[in-house]
Length: 97
Image 1 (tube, one colour):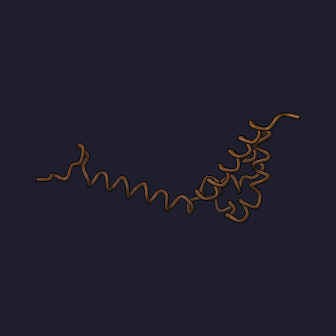
Image 2 (cartoon, one colour):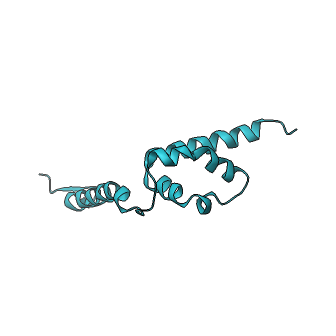
């Protein structure tokens, strides 16, 4: 007989936690600053944003709308992280002139 527990965890509790996490991910883009920008604008400055980060300039202060968007949008965040990683990898593997 199954009592509804899996590894000592109540299934209702696990389901409620999963639903809460799902709802939080769903709401995140809606809870952003209304002054924030959309994907098109954020990706339109991503090259400048990465350049600023790569030289140690505080890009989020200069582009707060894009910074807010990169936090809220998983797709744009992944693109930003990928470009930052590529720039770092390139900097490590390229000889200095």
